[in-house]
Image (cartoon, rainbow, N blue to C red; front, side):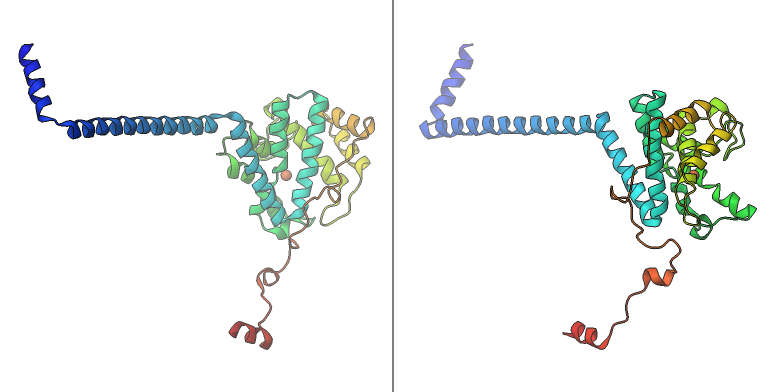
Length: 288
Ligand SMILES: [Fe+2]
């Protein structure tokens, strides 16, 4: 114990006032530096935790996934405004049928997402065969691939709803006569059964590229004709009640800013890529 005190005295004698002040100053700087490093580390960890939490936050994920659906919808619109507007009207009707059937808000949201992009698989198919009637069996088979192709495109997107499956099933029919897999009855998701009815009603009632609309009455006749065999009876009833008793109307997409054709679907390639020839005046301007 006494040896230690002597060592301390010896060291103290070797340190003059300036050295002592410098040592204190260094210790203060070191402490402040440690505090700053600690603070910065704390801030970094806090930010990292917040970032991880934001990725885990279901509402942020849902927001991101909705923007993905927006992007797909916009892609379809640039490819074919008719199909994009068809999908919008179908989605609108789906939401109303779902409300009539008492579908939960969560499932209705997923149904709406699927309905907004349900024909995205058509983008892969040649435009020439999509907008004309009287297809050959081979062409018809090709068109019917769109449900499966749409599924393939989005099957790996981690939607909290079965969006890809609804897209794949929207042409299945209750008696198993639909496509692509010939599913029947409750093997078909309820959301897909709703989408099937809304899709048919819109397609018959509203004008298509190759014919004018046949009107709501013709559309309702078709779903009543296939009630219980092709289409889910409860969904048909809900749809008929909407139009007949609740004065449902498809949204007017012209007024609400629907998609306008970016270009005619069958425009020749030259019309899409052609650039006006550079004239003598423009040559001069370019040279300037
Ligand atoms: Fe379809």
